[in-house]
Length: 198
Image 1 (tube, helix red, strand yellow):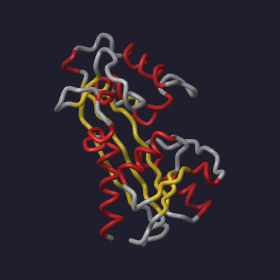
Image 2 (tube, helix red, strand yellow):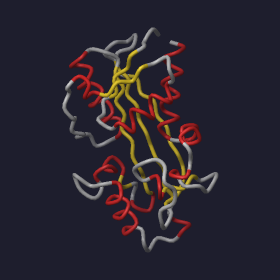
Image 3 (tube, helix red, strand yellow):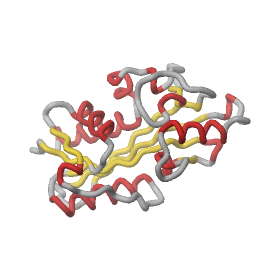
Image 4 (cartoon, helix red, strand yellow):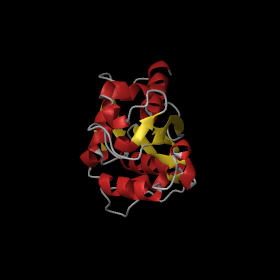
C-alpha cells in the first residue's frame, strides 16, 4: 500500500513519538492538531468504539489515512476498571500521578496473587484501499499491579504495571524494549505489516 503520511487522531505527543518509532522512517506520523482539529471527546463504551470515533472524526475532516487508537489498563480485581476511563480515572483533568494514586488506593487491600492486570490497545485505521472501511488491530500486554512505583520511563500507569514475564515495571524498560512487548507495540506492528504487505 503506497502510504507515506498517516495522521494520528490524538493530541498526545508521547503517543505520536511512540507510534512514529514503531512504524519507522517509511511513514510520517502527524498529530491531528497540525490540521487544527480540536480534541475529540471519547464517548464510546469500548476501546473499539473510541478508536473508530477518533479515526472517523479526523478522516471525515481531512480525508487522509488516519490512525485512531484507544488503550487502557484493565485490572481483574476491579472488574476490568479503569478500562476505557484510564486516562481520566481520577477526574477529567487528572494527572498520571493522580490516576496512579487512585488505583493504588483502590487496590490497597488486594493481595499480590490477585493483582493481575493487562494493558489493551485497539487501533482503527481508515483511508487504506478500502477507503472508508475501518480495519482494527489489537494488542494486549499481561502483567500485574505493583504496590509502589518503579522506574522513570514511559507515561500513564507504566510505573506500577509490572510485566508478567520479566517482573520489571513498564517504566523501567527502555523505549525499544517496551515497543517489542507492549500492547501498543503489538497493535502497531500488526498495522505496519498490513500497510507494508497489502
